[in-house]
Image (tube, rainbow, N blue to C red; front, side):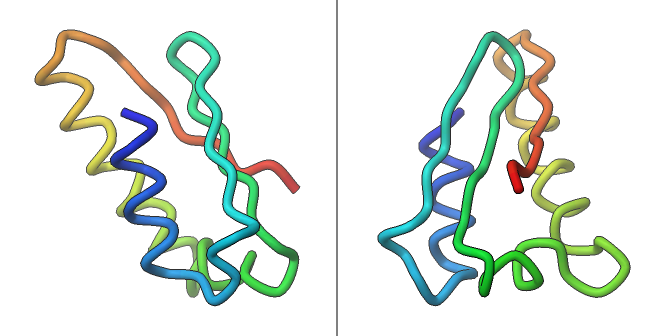
Length: 72
C-alpha cells in the first residue's frame, strides 16, 4: 500500500526527494517538504480526500482498512 501512496504523492509534488511514506499497521503516514504541503492537501482538502478514497478502495480489496495521514 505504501508504494501506491508514494507513487501518487511523488507525482503531485515538486521536491520528489523529500517524500517519505511510512506504514505502521493500518496507518500510512506521508511526509513532504513544507513548500509542497499545499499541493498534497489541495483546495479545501480535495486532493488528500481523493488519495484517501483510492487507498481505502485498494485496501478494502486486500481485506484491510488503511488510513492516510499527513505528518507536518
